[in-house]
Image (cartoon, rainbow, N blue to C red; front, side, top):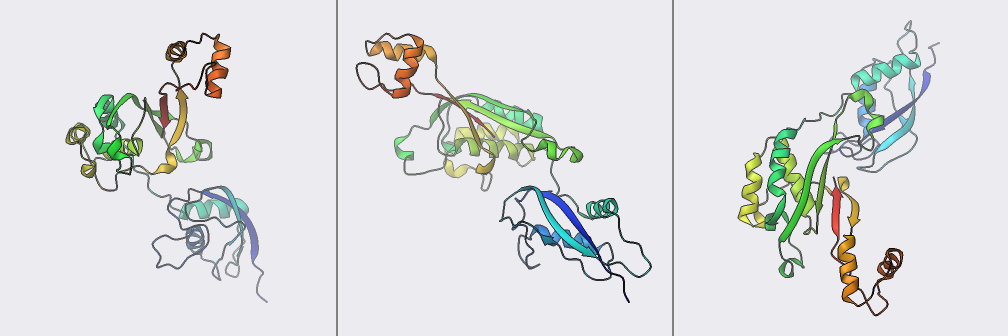
Length: 275
């Protein structure tokens, strides 16, 4: 009579960007499921019968998981002891090869970012839409900083020794997809696909179609961090309507969108985006 398989409960995490979801897929698909890779790693443990992961919670393509769970049965050859929990964990992690993460030339990106600061014609850095004809491409960028970041999920990946960086952009207003194009171009510089001076050349050509294909940064990393109003400008505009209010009343009037004498056109904000 053969020995019974040992059953294990495993917990695992993943960035879902490069997977079709967690569930197993056919091997001929462009994107495979997380389960494909787990089972491929498990077969290298040389079980007597193929190992199948029974995943607790399904996730769709692109969805991340900080802690998913699955159970699996492992039957080893006669005479071989069953894995302990730590042995199984270490063995699976040994055969689960992390996706390669390419390092960036951050100093080159920081040098390139300097060309984006100031008042420029950002035609090359906007995507065309129905509003393009009526909008001026002239925009003022006050800040483009590339700096270390703790990362939102850094504490889950401390064992990987990953470095997280953020690009902080601050300006009075932005064109359609301007920040995504700017960041994508900076990343291209960091990867060696472009030189820092190419950013200056892209500004000078003033043509949206001149922007490198597939270089725009994806939207999932973009955050609107803050919208700021200059207090002095707020008071000046309020006085223009002939109303003088203390700061607390001014705030209430601005929130309501009116002064005591009529509608208030709010001053143009300073927007701050974080990628």
